[in-house]
Length: 410
Ligand SMILES: Cc1ncc(COP(=O)(O)O)c(C=O)c1O
Image 1 (tube, rainbow, N blue to C red):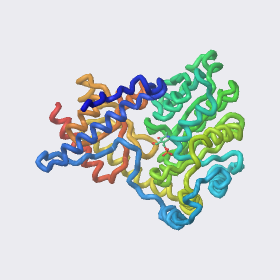
Image 2: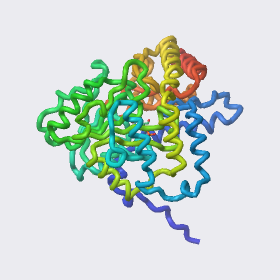
Image 3: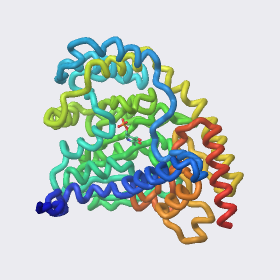
Image 4: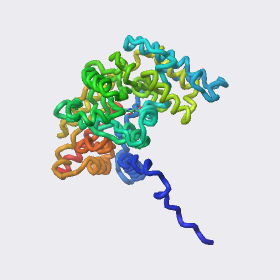
């Protein structure tokens, strides 16, 4: 029997897919899987994987949301395709939330859009507003789907490096006038992943000023709006010019711990919402009414949920920062929940390791998985991201494993 050679797909897949470059995350994933295989052997003596590499929380969603989904699950309409008109109760709940949260009245029909996660919305928006070759500004480090969205749209990314010594404040004055004139889109996000910086309303207002001056669309990705541990998070909706230039993305994933259910929404200028809605009409039929019922319950009945999460995240942040400091890893305590953004420790710097080499060695030696900073763009090199997504005892135990490894290396 002649066995056909395995086809090579490299010439088949688009250049666009080739540019997506999700390599760092795929490799991290493979390393975690390999570690789990090794430690599943009882003779290995290895501790279990402590996965701190994903911003996927262990904290629970509000029971009211889960009950509402459950109650609606068996209804025949929940199994049907859901066209935009049927999402109106959800859009009304979002409009009411925006009024309560920001004092801003938004039109549920023309200024609100349901999303399958803010990741989906921010990844699709560039396709709705950019032509191939158009230039778009991203912060560096950036959230990976922001760059992915530009690649999907065959757009040209222009990176604005953020500087740790400037408190990660974007320096818009560093962009020359010719570049401002070329830009069609700016994608920002404060509170910022991965640097865990809350940011300031003034930074966003400065971006709004540039956007309106140069006719640039300003997309503000704000899934952490409720998770500033110190101070209040910025919001595009607080600047009345959002109706001229902007769109803001919010999510049920972080504030209500519903990440797996993929529920988010955009509020924005009617023209941008219309464009995104038209684009999404080709891609998806919206989330089931059962999931939307859960989101409505979260917004309406569990408005205090994010506030209740903060005490847990604050304790995790402070105790993990102290535990890492105690084993010789300096930490800049961040102002937002969920992440520590860590400069590579002295043991890695002494060996000239980059972020991926360090994270791979750390995982191999300790079973603690972090995200290499280079997955967030060139500006993330030299850093690693730690997600505070396990109970504090496990985090501290992870810090002790790390400390024992540092001691061996010293
Ligand atoms: C900046 C940013 N945007 C979007 C997302 C994804 O959110 P969602 O679950 O709503 O897609 C994340 C998740 O970590 C994020 O950090």
